[in-house]
Image (cartoon, rainbow, N blue to C red; front, side, top):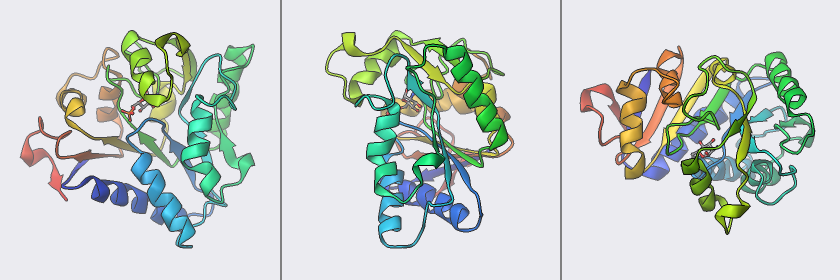
Length: 249
Ligand code: GLP
């Protein structure tokens, strides 16, 4: 596992942004996994700026979103599909038919999960961007999720429901109580993971993710078992790590 700690947030965003742009320029059919949440937003701005400056094109990129709320249509303003569209996809030249996501409004969610898992198997993800939730979740794999799980529906934990207030919901009662997510097993099939974390509030979580036991009680700990991971942190998120374990940037 490579751990990089950046002095400035914009350097972290530019590093991850340029790493992925470089990959996209050098591959004919890149498959990128995108995460919602606030952490990757600076990377998405980097993509938009570079697209506008004609330094990168997303026409050949296939995109896979990580997770979604159950009960919201993709066009619902609070869906993760809408968030990805608003924050990134509507500002770049990605083709709409290349944007893939779980649809949390389907009547048969088991079938929807199988559809998505098969689609990912047919289009293996080259680089998956990840963030860490306040209870240690990745995507919407809450504590207790099987480490080899496929796409599935989950009951959201209270902490995740409360965190959703940061994503535009006005009242806690409006937040869906279930999510649908790539499983930990699905995520582990990606060829490379880029885990990002920023801020003091993530410091203890990052420590446990990197040094703690690999356990379904703390789903992000699974990244220790992935053969190709880059963890990109700002100084605050890295404050509980030993200096000898990371590279300073
Ligand atoms: C949500 C998403 C995750 C994301 C996490 C972290 O729970 N389902 O995919 O990684 O939030 O969010 P933030 O980056 O805002 O801390």
